[in-house]
Image (cartoon, rainbow, N blue to C red; front, side, top):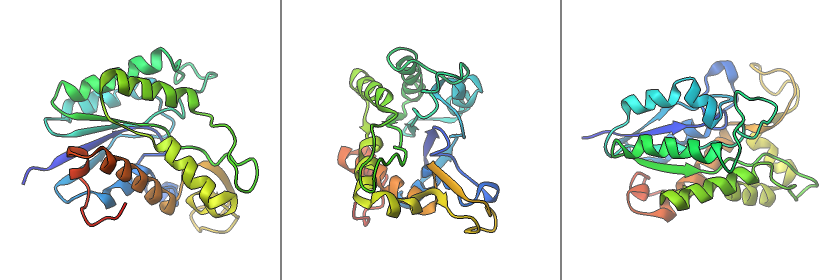
Length: 232
């Protein structure tokens, strides 16, 4: 049986975590719950990376050296590209960010692999108990959608789907999805955490499931990787 690889390029919301950062969990590691056994996740996502710094550190080059025909490259960035105060990571949404995304797409396509653009996860940016504020990533979401259209590649809009899920749950109930918990909740993380960006296991599973739902809606080879029995 041929093993098809699903490569992830992304940031801390996607990365694979271990006991040193527990209970933080990335979407990429939870995504394995939704795919058939003949598919395997290879997760190169890393905390703090943007489309620029990911390439500058050689992470895209490592994918370039391994990805092959029939594999997939999931590309999820935006959180760190928007950090204007950091020239190591910042990209301009309508120029360098788009150009970088096209480089990632080319890496997949030149090997006969399939790129998928995934808009960034929304932060838990509530302005009251049920309503989110204006999204911080919107310029990058728009740029990613434009790139998908120009390059004729599929896109999963995790940004919009996560906003819907967050507002449906509300401020208090959505805390369990993120690294937002009181002092003493975890022996490995005894201090209070008010982190509205990074995920715990339940959140990673939820948002990985939203990506799986998006792939199912795209259909074809993107749906075929999913476990058929899952009701999404």
